[in-house]
Length: 284
Image (cartoon, rainbow, N blue to C red):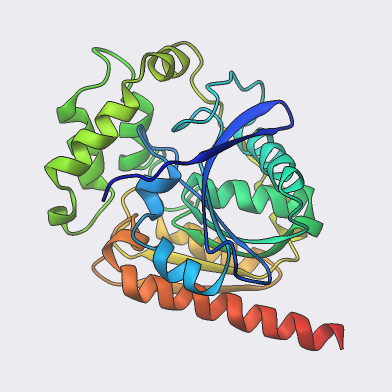
C-alpha cells in the first residue's frame, strides 16, 4: 500500500511529520507511535490498522523525532523523555487537549513517559510489546533489540540485516515480504539517518521506578513469541501500573498489530470505547 502524502508541523522547535485520518470524527483522537527499529515509521507500523481506527476516531500517525520524515535531530539525554516532550508540543500545536495512544515497542514507552510527565494529555494507552522495565528472566538485550542496536555498526546497513531483523519481530515469517524489507531498508539508509545513528546512537533511559505514578488506563498487548520484549516485563507492568489489563496473543511475535490485525483492532477500539464510557460516567 503506497504511503499517502503527509503533513508537517513545528512541535517545540522540532519538525514532525504525520498523517491524519478521520478528521471529521468527534471526541478523543488516537495517536499512533511506532517502534525504534531501523526504517520504522508510523505508516509502516500502522497502515494496516488506520482504516479501522479512523472509522471511530480522528487518527494521527506520527513519525517520532529521528525517524521517517521527521527531523533528524540529535537527542541529548533520554530518548523517551525527549520524544514525550515533542509529542506534548505536537498536541499543543494541533490544539488537541488529550489523546488515546497506541504505541508499538518504543512508541509505547514514550506514551507511558508522557503519562508520567503530562497526565493531562493522556486519556488511555495501548502498548504493544513495550519494555520500559528490564526482564528479570531473559537475557538483555533481547534478540530483536540486539539486532536493532547492531544495525548501523560494523559494515553498516544491508538488506540481509534488515531481513534478519524483521524476521525476529514476527512469529510467521510470511509477513516479512521482499517489499517490506526493501521499503524499511531504503528508509533506514537515508544519508541523514545513517549519519545520525552511526555518530549519535540512542541512550537507554530507565524510568521504571516512576511507572507506578501512571494513572491513565493501560492495555498491554503482547505476543507470546516476542523476541524483542520479554514476556515477564508484561507481568511486571501489570503489577506496577495503577490501572492495567493484559492480553497475550499465542503464535505471535513483536508486531501484534501486523500479525493479528483484526483482533488487535477490535481489542484496541473496545478498550478505548470502554474507557471513554467510564470517563463519561465518572464525570457525572
